Length: 501
Length: 98
Image (cartoon, rainbow over all chains, first blue to last red; front, top):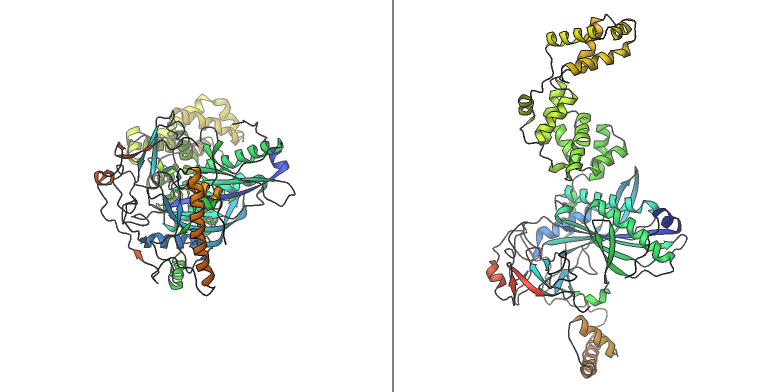
């Protein structure tokens, strides 16, 4: 394998125009598999959720999961697709032990949904991603490769198969070639997958957790010289499984393709593996042609022909779509598009909404989740929602600040305590003794002392330099170890020095 | 009449993971040619008013309610496995000569 020196992203974009195609697999959240009644619950012991059908034993027959079809139609409708009046499943034949049947039941030329689009926000602008199709298929089993250096398939002596996942319903959503994204191609790819994830979650058909493998993305990318109409040869980077990785994979492939093309080389149509550690890709297998899969209509299943009445009923029951919902929230919260994008990227929308529902003002709820808590989540390398603090607890902290029991600094310490497992906000405040000094007598004494100790500053304030009061506020805050309400301290200082605020 | 070449038979054999000798390639090329020819004749008889049949029954929308049914025990599931390890099916090296 030759290692090509990457071209800088800017140089690559100056010479070439990227064209992308994104394939996203979503594992549906149905209780049972697509073609049999085995449970789909996560975390079960190996091979405890299998039956003759999903093991491909002779004589077994599949039956379609009605909820799987319903979810597929909902996804299709939410993606503005047409829904097939009649469609079939097909066998995709291949020999690989992750499917014990030696074929995957999928859809080929008759997808249940086709010709749609999804609008996504990129840097405050709307970019329309056209959808080619969304089709139903089934997940494969899970392989563990033994004997290789790093658990990888290369160098493995043998492999172990757990078929609990084999047969779990998947919806594969394929875009049309995404052109015109230009230098924003990586951002567009990330925004599309983000929006799709939000959409899937809002439909309630899957939790779409990428870190759990419930949503996986393949990135197809090709470059064409600027001004050329014809698409270049594409590479297909498989299993790009986080939003950040989607962006990185596109960027890397743009730079790699440009390097190969600049050298006068040709891009090979192949699958590539993405490496999380450094964001690079390496060559996988040379891609099979579709005819090598020898697709043919699945004889064991009858066609799916959703009645128009059913489709319209499902359309009528669609929830408010995430972009519409976000725009409404954005206006309510008084945010710019850019700020709202950050909230979305941080996975904070539901958390902030829940905190507001618990009585917190919108700006305070956003401030804590996007500030202190986002910082902590980032430090700990976890999703915001995984932090051990609830929206109700954050709302309680906001309430304590509002009633004057806590100032900003004490509120931060309270949150720290909650995150450290010391209890709810009130418990932490009591245990750590974090109440603001609101005893006017004690505060008055502290102010008097600060004035006496800083006579020169006090004189300046008396002389009208109100801005100098900050220094005295600081002295009082220090004396009370930060446990005073700074605004109240300032009022007292000005009052005592006989100056109007 | 469709003709199937020796190379195509070799390709199909590879996809089906069948190891064929040189004389077998010739032998099966002839046989497959006969089969494809027979199907082609049926296609000639069936005009455009006869749609391709993928299923003999005039049924659609046979579906099942999304309710969990008992699975096999792992012992039952693995009963016919030629080899097993850690309650999993053990299979030979996947990437070999390729």
